[in-house]
Length: 273
Image (cartoon, rainbow, N blue to C red; front, side):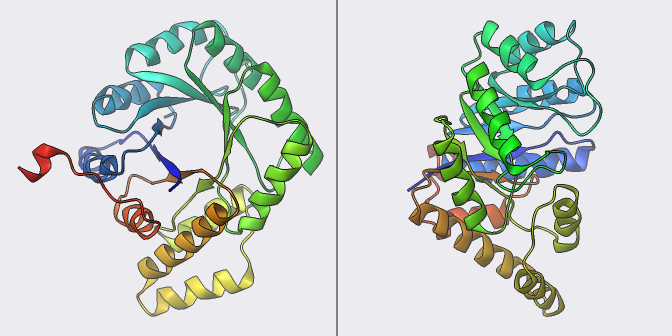
């Protein structure tokens, strides 16, 4: 069975906080190797979420840090703060808006100086929207590895061949760090299409047609579970040993996928007492 990990985001309302709590309670039973918390526009919210999750059984916690939310002067103190909040590592990202004088290499280097156990970086199995070419994506990943990154997590994709080709090309370029495929189970097909367009994730016509039909027939959840399970199984059959799920703070579909892959939940004693 592959190792698994989960991504969560900081809630902004009380009802969202309860939803996150329910998702965490369900997903922690699958004993993830690690879990990450995305970077809110207000980094303090990320710290609050890390503190809330530090004893939730989610494995080693990772804090997303972006070049768009930190300055070079503030970064060392913030890294110390995320460690004190329970993070054992970071996910170093450029961010969606203009950097504040930082580069990803700065995040990696500062994390190394602060003795972070894990330093994850992002990579794209399909070409990054801002990349000059597919080769430049590979070169950038190699630079991150040389700077001290310990593993990479990919942007989500819907077709296993994109990941498998990228993995093999990266290895040929001297990339030896683990490349973990990021899996986005479809929670809402309309929203998923919007996200896919923003990051240049390809959607084959037959997949789009399948989800459109599933929406009309009221079986989107079943389609989502089947599609993601098939994708994950294909990856596993081709040697992938770790899957990272973008949960969107919802557990039901992710739990069903993990169970279908043979990853049985491990109930704690207090949950069955």
